[in-house]
Image 1 (spheres, protein in one colour):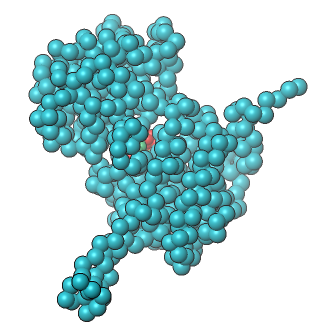
Image 2: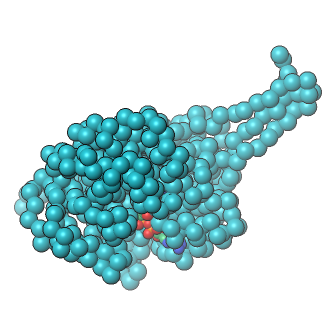
Image 3: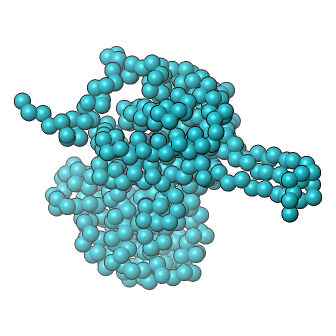
Length: 469
Ligand code: NAD
């Protein structure tokens, strides 16, 4: 029999076969050598030892470690394996887009250069404001960007001198273990301490709770829905919460409508709408609504016009008003087939007109279904966009050439990311200026997190010296 040993499926199986899984629990059999420990406590203790050792090392080693982490994560076999594995394991997303997201996190996450020292010098001497590590950070990662968040958090947190204990989402466990194993390999290959990035074999909610109260965890970072953000903010520890969004894309009559339509479909369909920043609903001024829809269709949107079919679709993806995980991150074709709709092969997004109160507009669906709400004018549009964003202060998009209205929207909606005249992903440095992050901390205000977000501000005062002005 001929076996294709170059195909992604073969490579994924080969990697998965390297990890032994206990029959009863399904948890991997581990010994800590790849950063995976049997218990959360053992993982935290190992990370604490590693972090102490890390503090004795020069910054040059940090830089070398981060370069090696980037290199291993960009290796062709690794990136392809990780991205194929995460699609298979989580059952969500689009392989090609996962590659793009993984590359973005790996190449763009700021390193040690993000830590800028401030200084005051004068008659009384010289004072430095330095960015210093917290110690061991507990980081909870989502199922929607599991590998990207591990890479992004690891680079930022280690650049700031910390160790990190991950509590990955159970639906992306094998992918998370593989990322942690590879990152540790990279660190050790350049002489860095082992176990700066760890996790436990069975990261349940109980294990995450154990992590939150462990005395050796000095900071918590949660990337996920409202439940986990609330949990870390209630921990009594320094916490960064990167929570849910429901980004509206507002289009007014001054916008370049052809471009707006393309940008919205590109952003909404990216990784099957999994990114928390992706367009989740459109609010459009009536005067240009038909032309926008016409151009969306030219870019791979399929419009559902029958009201009953729209309501049936809502019942399918939100039975009894609650989001069904069965359709999160699935393709438009897959969802259409489940809804009994016969759509063209190249359909990227299902669009439909709804009221602003419709479940499809109100829920954060995380799938390529895009409700469109018509409004009489841009002022009403801003009101509706603000309402649909639910005060998450996460992300909003606006297509307009009216600077006054763009400014008004930015002031009213108060989102961490506000993209003007581009697809949502421009907001994380993909076709827009600025560095990427996969932990966007709206609730706690750090915004697009990077190494400096994971550091303590410490003042170091030398009295009566080093003023050389
Ligand atoms: P989720 O909230 O279901 O899970 C996130 C993580 O938290 C998982 O590891 C999960 O196991 C853990 N978790 C959940 N509840 C917990 C609790 N009470 N105690 C401890 N751990 C708990 O989210 P998800 O489905 O994996 O991801 C999608 C959600 O995350 C969306 O709402 C999306 O907007 C949001 N998200 C936000 C950002 C951001 O940067 N702001 C990035 C990605 C995803």
